Image 1 (cartoon, helix red, strand yellow):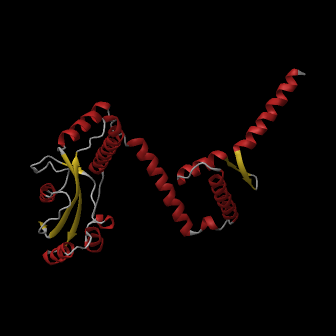
Image 2: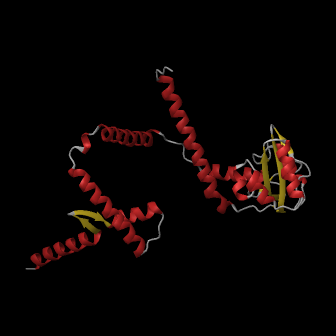
Amino acid sequence: MIANFTRMAVAVAAVIGLQLAHAATVNGVAIPDATIADGLRAAQLPDTPQAREAVKQQLIARELFRQEAAKDKALERRPDVQALIADARNQILTQAWLKDHIKPAPVTDAEVRARYDGIVASLGDKEFKARVIELADDAAASAALSRIKAGEDFGNVAQQLSLAPSKAAGGAMDWISFKVPVQEGKTQNLPLVIAQAIASLPEGAVTPAPVALGDRRYVIKVDAVRPTQIPSFETAAPGIRQALQAQALERATLSLVTGLLSKAKITQ
């Protein structure tokens, strides 16, 4: 009797657990609760009842579409559909193969610390918050500078005239620090003449004349200057590790491609 009761309790618990694990069924096909959780993460939505319901309804609709498509036996035989299936299959296999064969070297704590120390050593006493307008030639640069000198907002001129990607932000750059006097190769990847111009300007000032770099001209303003803010190692380490991991992945990928190219017969 006790054994029968135990078996019954286990069976009931299993059924209840199965029902809880399935958020919905569509013509007998279960949509697990875990799939909804995955959908929330993929969409970067908060785990709220409203968001869960929205994702569930999307999954129900997708399953209905899938079932209807599966009923159309001629669909899979269409050449365009066959080509898409083949392409999807190739992509899945390629990604799986790459995952198995690209093995970047692990990033060590010592490497993260060394990169942090190197960055800190490259910084100057001050850091600058600057804006830059990139222009095509002397005439455009002179026109932009004249508008700024006449009192027009630097950011507005940048948004209207700059050729740089930062135009949408009014030419604003991130805070940057480098040792002064500025030396080539020690400018945090800024062109030397741009770094020199930034370092020479007091807070709030604009370059009196456009700065020439190749065939482009630059008008620069320094919005603010402050003592260099150095984040702690603990704060900076995750970002540094991520950057080093990306570099390791790039090296491993390049090594794999180089090896494949050396064995391949390619005609162009």
